[in-house]
Image (cartoon, rainbow, N blue to C red; front, side, top):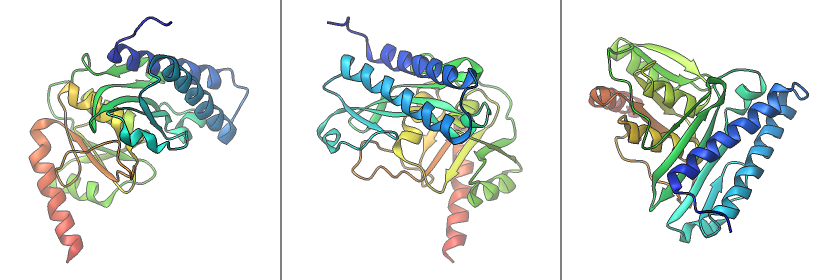
Length: 251
């Protein structure tokens, strides 16, 4: 039998291993474009699934790259994985892609890791700490679907919008202090945010849905369309501006 590995260590090592696999797939230069992205997704998923099968056979699993086994709904422990978040960015040679690994217990991420392979970093619960310091004056948003609500908030607070790829990359750059907030509205799934939420909350960032409620995980419907990550001292201002925007939309 394999030696027992603690949950926090397992989450970290899964992110490290998948990061190395993905860098190897891309850096040898034999595949390009969509084929490269598909290969990265498939190989990282296969490796993660095999590790969890060996080390956590009784836990549930939800992954972007695997068929949804609804038996997870009866499990108090579920691993929520996105083996390659930002496939387009990965395939095109950009750096804003990530690996997401989260253990969710009773609907909340308890141990999580987000790897930013091209930066040589893996952020994980228990060790990640949000950078404290002057505000950057910037909000990061999706580079393919920048939401109108984020522009409204940025204008209201006198801040600049910056576009970036992977959700994990955006959340971790808020943690690093490069941006003050990450606002998403317009469609994501549980695997897009479970690991970033786990790491960000552990590090001391404010995290919520855009209505201010806490996100929950391992639901029947895995659609989770909106999210806010920000410095704690900005949360009330941002949520108030979001509420103003939503009220104006409804008129």
